[in-house]
Length: 409
Figure 1 (cartoon, rainbow, N blue to C red):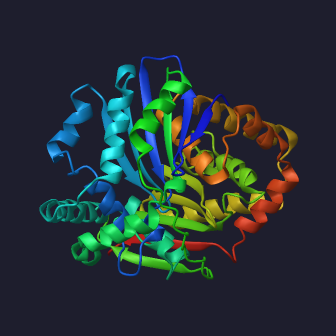
Figure 2 (figure 1 turned 90 degrees about the horizontal axis):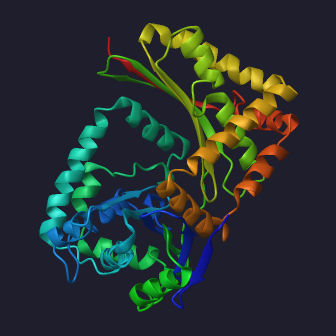
């Protein structure tokens, strides 16, 4: 992987991926997300992400919003369980303009009371909208089932009660505790000499005071599989089946990524899609996902269909999982699965914003970024025996949880 890294004295790292293009992409990744919130502070990390765009010591809300849009650039942000990310795409001449805005909103936001009040209403509306989308709501509720009693199970948006309770003190304490400078990566993908990128980053971020507080994430709690049904005022049934999965440093992570892609990953040729949608026409959407995190992971299968079709759909899902537990993939099947997965990863390199965010997260989590050749070598090393072992660990009926939203009769 063609990239370079520079570390500032305060611990902030900059990663540069050179490209030949007049369009550049940049991100700032902070190793802090919803799992780092304290008790009764659900949604605080996401609330802060919204407020970063509101007011700083030197810029008003309008000045922040117009700073990049006036030069045709795109600015956005998102929050996950473990990360906060601000990112932008812009024309080549506007690197310093973009990074200057990153530095301003991340380190100099003032969180005024009037903007907090307005943004609380925006997020409360977002929460209400989320409840109207059962396909999204069930996935969040399922994570709460997997991590019941732990902050990893909390909805990233928070609740009406918690969002309304947030104060400036809550925000300041969260940032002080979690925006650690040695856990921040600035990623730049663009046509620049590395020394120019370093010069800009040192100029803008070198003056930030170091913050290297010790991480205080709570350990993962015990998991007990559950089977739950909820009546809802909806038209279709929705179901999620899944399990806690391998953490990002687990030796079988790559194997589970491959197995997930074969089972229900991207594309129309996954086993679940071919069996349940193409062969029987039961569900429009059926997919599986695996998300590794620092000390755990989530594996899940989602499907939505008419209530009367759900029992058959679930039997078909169980049958596919049983096949993977009982039968090794043949050499041709294994090779096809690997080539599909490798091709998808290679094509993903064309999404340069996604690429620089992925590279920055990799540097944050592993201290390095693997080349495509190294990634492909790990995939090709996976054996059918390893996939059989993974399937029996992840897809055992005794360890799978199931949540169903069903229409009220």
